[in-house]
Image (tube, rainbow, N blue to C red):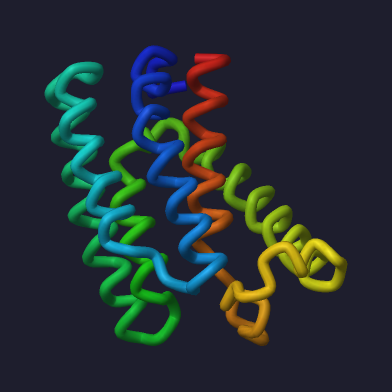
Length: 163
């Protein structure tokens, strides 16, 4: 792992609350608030300067800029929702380039798990616990903040544990 276990542990302090807020908001309202994405990005800067070498923080900032440009283009082409793009850009600095294989595998697993969990819950009495959630009635649209936030949190947990 390129990210150290210690850094991942500190980053979890930001990723868990902002990720949980992202998941809840996207499931309930199909929106990812700026508070979640801006908070995640600012937390990287604050924590990063204490737990990462300066050069790695700069690479994280560069990754954020590149991801922001990419998601703006994908959003303009109608391939990605704005909130999902904001979350991807804000989460990018937390992921080290050498850990991309792990991240891609986690994203695939989280996406599959999130879709199955959401679709099963929609068809069972679990739905009655939160009948007002907007994500139940979206047809083919899916709250991607759910698997995206899960991916970031699991990545940091794995690195913190195995790092």
